[in-house]
Length: 362
Image (tube, rainbow, N blue to C red; front, side, top):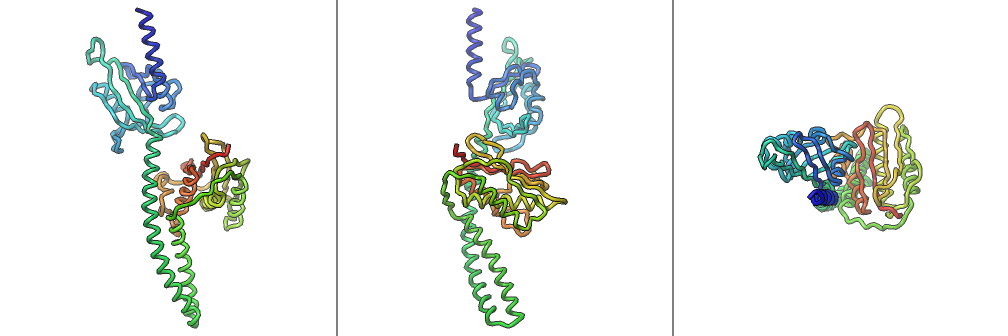
């Protein structure tokens, strides 16, 4: 009998160890008794045993699948203990001890006490499913659908815009050649403004058109150093720009990647040069993330406000008085066309870190 019980326990532990979903057991006092490997990975704890629910889910928040907030996870967990009602198919917004945000699908159900009596509860089982990657894919799909619609709209507007500008420029040139001063000078100003608007319309069209990418093995070092040299000779005299260390080989289109990195470097220089004293901008390659090579652009500027951090890659969103809102959107389009990732890695500590991840040649 003892051997049969031991074998059953061993089998249960083996099954739990291989489950893709996380399982956490709490005792009647709300302390963690057991957590399988999937749960430990999702929660970011190597040994959560002995922790209370309040410690484990300290800053976590529950919400419905549609995003409706339900309040702190700990409070709902205690309510499940008291009411002995199953709480299922909720989403928990959880932050690990090292600051990683997770989106976890959760179901909690209480265990009955001795002889099947409802009280006191013998404990509680928490089932976890890590939805972080799935949610990110859904967000990216939604983003791409939005980008496609915006691109079509931008193309139509830009086309009509350029037709009108062509007429304005034509009459402006006629006036410039036929009129005397001061009308001639005024015609020149009209042509200058029309040329600026035409450049904006060209940006819109470039963003809207499909982007053919010629992928080949290439060294990033020369491309990045050329971009650094390009911004050094521009108006950023109060900013020190440097490319540090060795840079990897990637699969990419050198011309398009140069455009993307130049855009990021210009933004970094503008941010770093906005404060007092001499600003700093660094480009480095801190290593790989899976099969992707990481390149970081770090500036000493004021950072990115948290309330706009999730919109900086959205087309036409800009905080610059004269900006078009297409710079970072174009960077995102170029990097995505390379099957890579561009993200704001850090913008909350008085500086900004943009990270570009590109397919490695290794």
